[in-house]
Structures are given as structure tokens and as C-alpha cells.
Amino acid sequence: MPTGTTIRLLNRLRVARAERDLSQGELARSVGVSRQTISSIETGQYCPSTVLAFRLAHALGEPVERLFWLEGETDA
Image 1: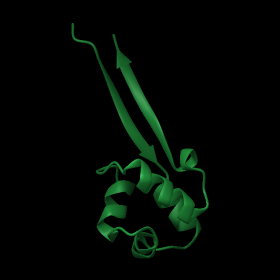
Image 2 (image 1 turned 60 degrees about the vertical axis):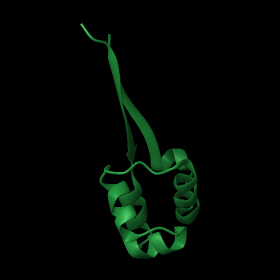
Image 3 (image 1 turned 135 degrees about the vertical axis):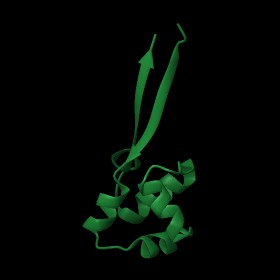
Image 4 (image 1 turned 45 degrees about the vertical axis):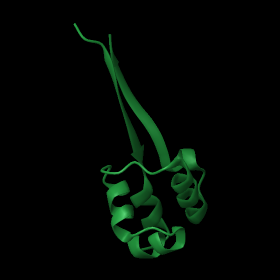
């Protein structure tokens, strides 16, 4: 039987952005990425770099670990 770990990066970026009444475009401009990048992060289709995660946290006034966290399953 194979063993493996599935780890996903989850986020609450959409919620934090909405709490501040920011559009995806406004947040994107403030951190130097496209609106599509913000959309992809919010839907879990794109995993941001560490630098981008910290930029987003700073722009939203949140600790990075409040915006992003790991969820994993291990099957042994």
C-alpha cells in the first residue's frame, strides 16, 4: 500500500479583502500583481510565493498565518 501526504494551502484572503471593502483589482494593485492572480489565490488554484503572502498580509493588516495555513492528510 503506498504512503503519501496531501497538503493544501488554505486561505481566507477573500474574507479579509471583503472585510476591508477592497476589490480584487484594488488589492492586486497594492501588492503589484494582476487581479487574476488574486482570484486564483482566493480559489486555491494558485499558491502564492512567500514574499507575495507577506505582501498580502501587510496590505490587509493581518498576520500571514491568519490569512494562510496548511491543511494536510497523511495516509500511512
